[in-house]
Length: 480
Image (cartoon, rainbow, N blue to C red):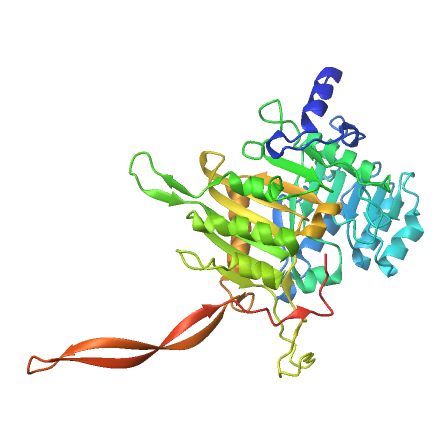
């Protein structure tokens, strides 16, 4: 790649014009040089596509972690591993990173500063904690690119490997931290891709900017590798797009609102006239606060406009639940909760009503949206939004990664994961409460002699209501 083409690529990547983003260019620099001239050390290839854990089945607990460890184990001497996640407590992951460092791999990790544990100490004892060195594990103070206050966090979950087996420039993005809790109590996803050097270079630039650990809030950064249109990133044509938070968000310029505004719900077939509905499937860890309210209304409007919409959540604010579940002419939006409690031995009855009040066992930590239908005027589009951004106000001030992936194959895999949760009553529960109300119904009955009389009957009919979720955060809940 020439210096001129590399410069042009860098300049057009920093802005995501379709999102109205303006970000600094300096954060998309400092990548590894391509390793095309090096011999391939192994036949092993990095994972590709999305992976999901299953907290309800033991054999599905560590599906994501195993992929990460396998990738670490296949990094050769001279390569670099970069990881920026909220939490680490898995000794097997730290052990794999220590072994990689001892064989000559540069190991760099950024963590949030809320937790100290054995796995962190093990890795820090090996690589140190100075973020200016080639290897380190460093905890950003409150957040890396946000203002230094108690409300901001490093909340990204991305993993970068310059080489792994015969794969180069491996990127993994999703909702998964490397913790035991993430594996056995949460639903999580992690999407793998490799070989896009420019996209990888931009992620490395973001990582290097994060390791500066600013005291003041930095501008958001948008990138997508090399834009398909050669000018600016567009999630309707580019394979991948990314936006790095913090990013001030209001209803008029929130990325979620802008994405949903591009969704056309009803599309007539030009030949048959048959109307096709766009399908939306949202799996969201938490929705609450003022931002949760307006995003709940935004996706509810897609239901009003005719989209087939389904929503699952881990925890939702009661007011936000009332917004998303408000009645429409089509009825209420289909809504299920992944917050489940199967621990009958530990009963936390907070209000003495005989009901266990805490989420103890399972809930979704995912933050993905599947779009299948007409997007930005293009019928039969397929796209997935994933990453670390919750539908809450706190997310906008954090270090977060918003990440979109175009393609029918990827969308179907995410939808399969969503359907598995949605269709299994062990995995999700109806978020609505069904009660019964008695109605007096008047009927006119004609008698055999031709006379007419009025008959009153009492009919018991089901009524769907929106009630506060009885589950509150318990010992396994991570408010991130």
